[in-house]
Image (tube, rainbow, N blue to C red; front, side, top):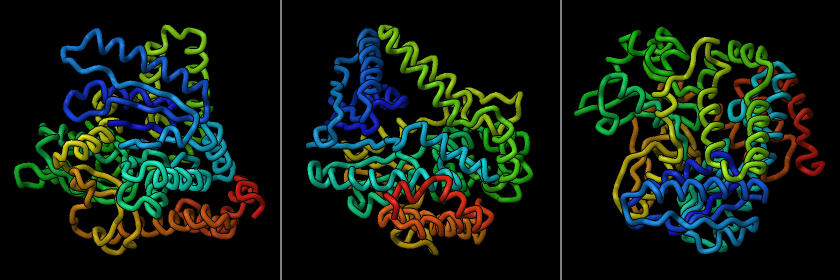
Length: 449
């Protein structure tokens, strides 16, 4: 089996390769193709993967060889005849992310990579490239499954589905990690629980957690001490979680505590994008200078990165504990999807898929984040109880904005882009939306449209 990773020079690629090294079942991925527009970054990641493979070979107890790694800057070569595509591109690089953050912050609105105006700017840049990728997949690898992690993941997945249909799914580790942490807080085995989760990417709620036929989430919600033991409980506070009657995805902090989040981010000496840009430049420079220590350097930088995730919304003395860091793992989500499809073993996962009739009140073609059954035929959304009016209202407003953004990116229409910014719940004025469009130079992005 062949896996193509788009954005193959990205810092997180070794996480995916590490998951493949730990997979010893058959059939399995035995070839990994890395695609990136930056040959230098590709070379650095290749070096990391080589050292990971050597270490895994030394420690191996099984007979499997490490997957072969091939790198290329040619998209058609990367995609031709592949079985799976893992898309984790970043159009505009981290420099684009920092601009997305600062333009918004300078106008007094939230600057965050996927939530709010920063996410819309990212989507406007990314959707055209995602569509080019989708068209290329159809032409050179029509039977391939595409697993999208490119942010904003729900929006990009929905755009690609116009070409690829149900052969593209979006993944995110946040919902699965949330359900896992909730189960662990109750002393339960996460593998023996079933999550009732509904939302959009980076905007959803854990509404139930079924263990042996019983919904045990109310026990957690009723216990302030237990709630404070998990990331989301500390982030939102037990009182607000209890008022909602559900555990919110961590990214909902930017909606429920918008002013607090904005104040915290503006009080920091640098944004998250600034931090990652500096950190990753130093990483790639270090690998170029000391290639023999590439994997060691990657491990060190990864630990720093994980420990500082969403640090801007935590108190100064509150470190992210190991259980919260370990609770995620998008590479595990990707591998679980591929394994179910390759081997035909049914599993349940929370994925970004076409809505159909799953979430009443949202368009059929909308991509939603819900529990799905995954097997050799792909992913199928499971039936779910309707969201409450508050949940549906927020989902509907954000989904309308996402669909306007996709339309603006595809038609190169500045007016549609302006409307999308103006209707986002985190943009508090049409005048501010117009300033955002000017600040992001949307007309330049669209070629003066």
